[in-house]
Amino acid sequence: MLTLDDFDYLLPPDRIAQVPLAERTASRLLVLRGASMDDRSIVDLPDWLAPGDLVVMNDTRVLHARLFGVKNSGGQVEVLVERPLADNEVLAQVRASKPPKPGCRLRLEDAFEVEVLGRDGEFYRLRFPDRALELIERHGRLPLPPYIEHPATAADEKRYQTVFARAKGSVAAPTAGLHFDANLLERLGACGVDTATVTLHVGAGTFQPVRVHNLADHRMHREHYLLPEATVAAVAACRARGGRIVAVGTTTLRTLESAALAGELRAGEGETELFVTPGFRFRVVDMLLTNFHLPKSTLLMLVSAFGGVQEIRAAYRHAIDSNYRFFSYGDAMLIYRNNAV
Image 1 (cartoon, rainbow, N blue to C red):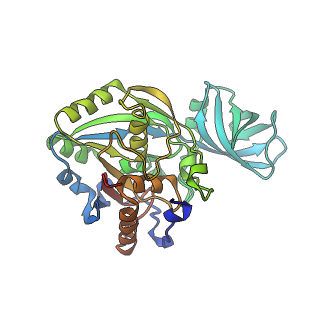
Image 2: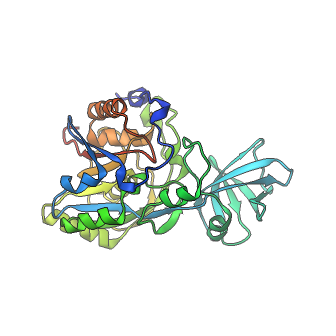
Image 3: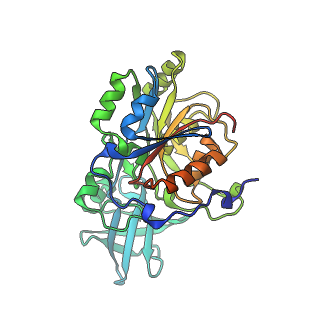
């Protein structure tokens, strides 16, 4: 039985990419097919696909979800919005010297006040004075991941969004999509590769480590997704012509596989808590483009389920030895589904 320790590895701190490369398509690409590895570049992606394949991307857009402020008692607070609820309510992480109590008011970014309504598990329910999304976008800050050590800059405002970002709602970028620019998308189309989109709003839980030794005891955070009818039709057409489904990022894969848990891929809107570990039966995705993930993370478990536990271990050792850049602003892998796992 696999445990948390099976998904640990040592990463030199200098392998964590702190800033994006000058060009989105300058990233390296490690192609993994079973035990076979090829060191390539993102610009080579069309070489690994074929006419009739379908590339599916997550079109979520990152919110300005981090806000700083003070409690009505004067204490400093940091708010990270997890997800909007009703028009003027959100779930959020709140960092403060003392946990705020229901009824407490927080003045954020010296611009407006929110009321703490209570706890909802690890999150707080906050009421905004007006439409929450509008206030967050107007006054908040881009929430870079905790391992990126600089505050968000103007460059991050552009590069921590995908070029196809559309639907506002995430607190973290679907980072595999950061490697695409307009030219790469055009080249894929010219090669006869189709594209489609899903929406999954990434929550802050994506950065939370698994804290239980027995993986069966872990409970995933919930994330909202939308799978359009057009994408379901595109998947069916791809299957009919013998093409492959290529998921750009773990969020896209989780959306597609969540919507197919009953056996047939179904369009619609919903919540997913899908926790993919080795032994999972993949029903939709044939290839996965993804970045390198944190030790002991649910995302590392997912790619291990997809590409093979031993194969991913070997690939990560190779990537570290070969100076690949890790995490959100880092390099990428193209993983063929390992049908032996």
